[in-house]
Image 1 (cartoon, rainbow, N blue to C red):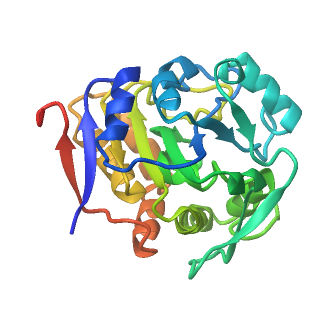
Image 2 (image 1 turned 30 degrees about the horizontal axis):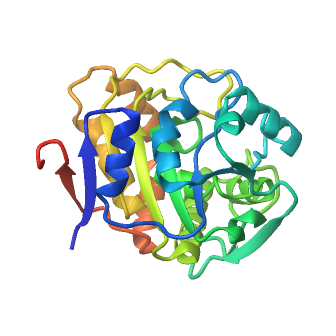
Length: 290
């Protein structure tokens, strides 16, 4: 069996809605929409105007959690200010899920973690739509769907726990591979928690080697590629990685170097071994198949 990953070269707000519909899973009830709010100063994050059509279509609430490092999103007060400055709270219902507290959910048969700490408000939602900006990352090598449901949904405390490889010691001095594998473990906890009430869209544009969490980020050098969607976050991230490697754009070398120098594929490999999803996929070009 292969997972289906849908692809379009057209990067527009209306296409985001189509890429949701083509997956064939209508999310029910109260829907949380996980985005990246963007660190203040970052020039590459996806703006709320781009996300508006899809968030309005599902009548979703934009959700985020506080960070565990210095910046303008590390406290609830600062994060709300960033949400307003970047236009999220002006355009949508917004929920900072660990505003008051977090909750512990189990990691079943994890490689390193046996628990994950997420924003407690996650329990208030019936479904989760994960909108991810695919790009590089200073520590993870790349950021996509798996990172968005692991580090992204983890509370501030949970982020430190994942970075620390299952400890609350200095999170930036922990064994690097343990951090990458812990991201896969925490992603598994979210997939188990949501069951069939989750769907994913990755947007491959503005692909800097740096994450949207960086206040000072490198400008993108690789050209925009498209939008991909899938019910399988492992297949989705693997497809994005392959599209970068197979690109004819010479600017890809910087992003590839970032992925490889940080051992970024380890998270995908671990997620596959944890049976979160498959690395084998069928890429369906929705523009051709119309």
